[in-house]
Amino acid sequence: MSTPMNPTAFPSSLQTDTLAELGVVEAAARIRRGEIGSEQLTRHLLDRAQRHRHLNAFITLDPEKALEAARQADAARAAGVVLGPLHGVPLVVKDNIQVAGMPCSAGTPALRNHIPTGNAPVAQALLDAGAVILGKTNMHELAFGIAGYNEGFWQAAPIGVRNPYDPTRIAGGSSSGTAAAIGARLAPGGLGSDTGASSRLPATLTGGAGYRPTVGRYSGAGIAPISHTRDTAGPMARTVADVALLDAVLAGENPVSAAPLAGVRLGVYREYFFADLDADTRAVVDTALARLGDAGVQLVELTMPHLAVLNEATSMPVALYEAYDDLAAYLREHDTGLTVEQVAAQIASQDVRGTYEMLVLPRKLPGPDGLVDARPIYEHALAESRPALQAHYAETFASHAIDALVYPTCPEVACLQGPEAAAQPVFMGYIRNLDPSSNAGIPSLALPAGLGPTTGLPVGLSLDGPVGTDRRVLALGMAIEQVLGRLPPPR
Image (cartoon, rainbow, N blue to C red):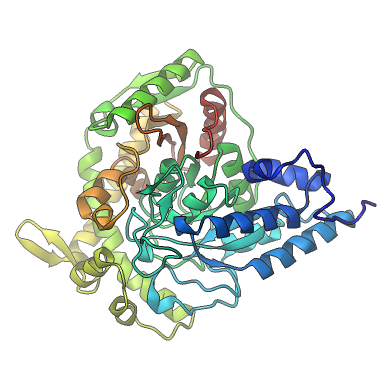
């Protein structure tokens, strides 16, 4: 039997910087081997979170509960009991995903005091695997944006979740706080959610990896929704290997291993995915693709002539129409005592308030001559446009015999944080490359590609695979990660 874990009795060679750099896989392995304690790591990360309040990464930190869970993990290990593949690993959870006993605000003031008594299934899966929940992370209000400029929740002025690589810039969104916490080494990994880009985009802008699975791979229960057609939880971490472990836990499977790259065929659609890139993004992506070619990957140039039109006909009609009914059902199911109108009346962020007042509440969509009734457009999107988009992807994968599409995750590096970052043109620009796979419901992985030579800010690559090929996409991502290497931490 192992001796009890004393948080002050671990090897002095494991300095505090090393602790913060531990990823999910490595932290789990070292805790299992008794090289570090869960309480030691949890306490260290909580201390870092307090020192990095300026990033506005958290809405709720619960040190007492986290440390107690960590002590229980250490006691179990000392008794020879392994709780699961995440035994004692501290993780963070986006504040639209329910964790029992912690507020689940969805980043909006009306739900500030909503404290669920149960866990969302995805949070329960982490806990069942032995994880420790450090706290709930900040987000773009009601998940309706990519900037993390949340006027209702911040720990330190100025407003807005901040990028660890440059705190004057955005951390992306809507899973802004999870991304900032992981990038700043306040946690090795955690959960976001993804309706159109919301786990992958912030992971990329903060130097990490984010995953959107095939829709339905994880349960969506207990997550404040936008769209049941498009929503999914999304694991986030600094490496694909860490994301793959989280995915395995959430899906109830064994983790994948890296796939051989020799002979892998990746599709490249330049007219859409490579348009209007900033100089840093183009330089990093060109270098990354060249290195993949040297590693044996075949880059297949192709076109998807109907992609843009089909995606536009699907994207906003589905999300904006379903937002009302899905939020109303969530509010009723979880006994919040609130209506959608009551939640909307307290929205703090101007961009989200405008979206609700103009589109969500009246059930309208922009038309050529003003606002029009959303329902016919939504029904057409579900019956015609979305199936056609899914078929277009399937035909592209099959006819070109490609394993996945590869493209820059975002057209540009993180922009400056502030109200302007929440503007509609900025939103549309950043989600452009990630939105189509979201609407098709196919697996999509974002991973680090390098730091921009001019800005020093993270740039990412994304892989979109055929529906249901989640394990293959993650295995390819792990292999690509080994070729491209890990990003250095923020200075």
